[in-house]
Image (cartoon, rainbow, N blue to C red; front, side, top):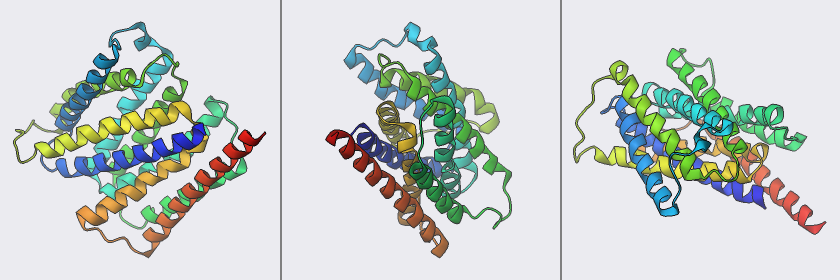
Length: 291
């Protein structure tokens, strides 16, 4: 049952991430990347800090130097940098689709670094979902944009983040690791400001974009940390593909994009692989309880 709960949390996290992606994509037309990083990360940190105060969870402890915490935080910083840079430089659907290579990378990492055993059916679910992504992005069909390489940094960094999250000691709280990642992301935003443009004034007309990013990022951090801490990485990996589905729904409803037949075929494969993986985990859970 732990994997089933983790799958639900992972799907919720992907919905929240896709929503924040849409806000970032729209806000990037008004605010430079450095400002987006700094302001929204600081606002998201404030949400987690309030939770920490309520739980009497200290911000400064020796756990900050725990190996798993350091791996997770470093991965979060570089992964977020790569992905947010991609969101501001290439189309939303392209950036979201490229990031869907992460489930395959995460499954491989779980095998080599966490010692998880991955059966043929889990590999099949990940592989079918990845084929769906390929149908959507169709590499080589358009002129190559070097800015798409930012997504590779995002994949590597976020895979390291997820490995670190899975390795976290049980006495390290989700608000603690999330708060520290957001502190460093805020500092990163300030550091890259000279390279991404001068800060712009925040007024009533555009504060909604920044608030939306902050809230959805905080929600996504909470859900994904919960999923990774209770479920097997290889079991929940296919559900990262749902981020692409949520992103496309947002692109259709809010951005007026119209997917073609190949894109819909890709969506069908992604959703189908996720449903299969979910049902398979339920079947395994029932069999385990029966023995």
